[in-house]
Amino acid sequence: MPLCEINNLRKTYPSFTLSDLSFQLNAGRIVGFIGRNGAGKTTTIKSMLGLVHPDGGEIRYFGLPFARHEKQIKQQIGYSTGAVNYYPKRKIKDIVAVTRMFFDTWNEETYREYLSLFALDENKMPAELSEGMRVKFNLLLALSHKSEILILDEPTSGLDPFSRDELLDIFEELKKRGVSILFSTHITSDIEKCADDILYIRDGKLVANYPKEDFRKNCCEAGETIEQAILRMERGASV
Amino acid sequence: MIRLLKKEMKLAASPLSYLFIIFGLMAFVPGYPILVSAFFLCLGLFQSFQAAREANDITYTALLPVAKADVVRAKYLFCGFVQLCYFALTAAVTLIRMTVLSEAAVYRSNPLMNANLVYLGFVLLILGLFNGIFVGGFFKTAYRLAKPFVIFIVAAFLVVGIAETLFHIPGMEALNAFGFAYIDLQICVLLLGASLYAALTLMSMQRAMRDFERINL
Image (cartoon, rainbow over all chains, first blue to last red):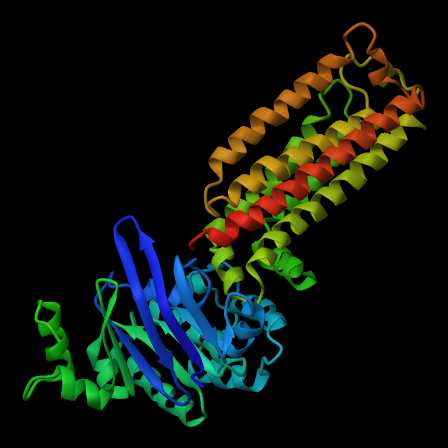
């Protein structure tokens, strides 16, 4: 059974439509969700987290429909929509103190471990952190309860190359611990480095959904990298 | 729900929401339209909504392992809690004016509304209008504050105007009774205010939960 299953997800805005998106997230996999800005990555992820109300389709986690088991499911998944953009003038420790109240599986040891790894100062406020540090703070909250799935919207955006590399290494480490990850990005090198599966979205439609090696076989022409293949497809060539 | 109320109080609330509870003491002020204190309390709550919006509080809360309907319930619960504190304070002042100070000359010669149970009934109506018009209106979008607050201001001052006028109409002087005079009438108006508060709050909360479910954050 897939950990997460999206079937025929639809959402229409006046100037954008997400059309019948279907994909799965299987245990122990890292899925890279790639597409240019405005392709529909954030709408998809926000729908998966209940922040956007879909017009149609079904979202299931652990075999349970999200719409009816939202509270229970959110206990078991970690999520981050980019950098922390809430409570800019509250201390990190105050935000954490409130957040931990809501998670039955909050692990203080894990929290301290990542706090130290990310070099975050609990007495600082989000407004005092750089963009990259605010991404790390959001990740810290997502990682500090025993999540089986991590859903991350552009977690590497705004990070310097070292932090990005460090974060992708953390993804690998989490995978070894049995955590499955779906992360969106528009940076193809992130996909090259750590994704097992690739979802490629263009204009609200899922263009490709393959394991990385199959993506290379099916979408890359001779000698092409994944980045070159995606650039070619973006320019209008068919898959 | 208690955890969400704690979250509202620790992260989302503006200190002004708590500070403005002391406007409940304005019921002691002679020669002043004391019903305006209920509006000031609502102004403090409005500050919390504004601060919460600037801090992306709704998105943070919606991402927690809580049902979307609970995000709405928590805001109503917080408003209800602050309103209860204010009401308890202003009710205590009102009782002092109805008993110990019922014969005080400074209040007897007051041309404006007297602090009695009728006053408390109108206070509850204004608080109910805040929940019904402003909080309910806010959850239609979860970010637009100005329009529902302006509508609430108009409604609140209309109520203040009506309350300050009614007892000047011949035959309705009993609404401005001192002490326990016309106590049956006073209790009736208080109960009517309490009923309107409950009805406006509950109806608005049900609608806000439906509206919020459909919102894209």
